[in-house]
Image 1: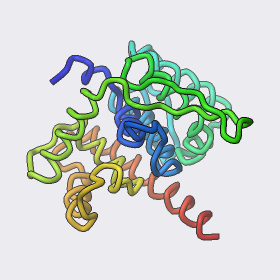
Image 2: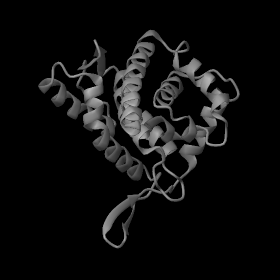
Image 3: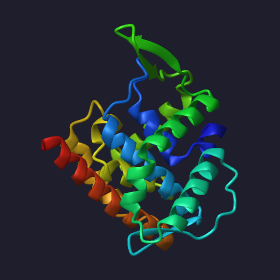
Length: 225
């Protein structure tokens, strides 16, 4: 296991799964964006910085985590929660989705895992893409997910949390692009229940599952409409 694995956040793991290794284009962009924002919030909950009460995020501890990506999001959430005391998790995710994705991709660039490429479509419109620069962390991530989901290995708490995010956002295709959904969805749903995790982690996972279910349903509804 690489040393970098320990410093890569849940949101970065979702982003790595989403980005095409060669083209650098994000797959399932909308759902992955929600999962990236949700991953940051869940990570902060796992680190006991954030709690969810009655569907509302509450900053329990605003001390730095030591991870620049998380500390930036925590600062923004602290300010938002202070000004929106009745704001719900779904409200925060809707506000934070775009900036969370940008911050997460920037962090991956700083880690040296992806590289930013700038293009212009039709010679006019600037487009940024993020192809793979170092595939070691993603390979390790996909191997870990395969061991747990396809081979039945017991997940650790972080892997349970990641799978819960991916399941909640319906990102089965980017997680296992070559495996039929019917083969992976039941196992991912089972893991997402969090029976392997401690009580506080299970609660954080359940809270985020509820939020992800709400935003995913809203995304699907808007797409159909």
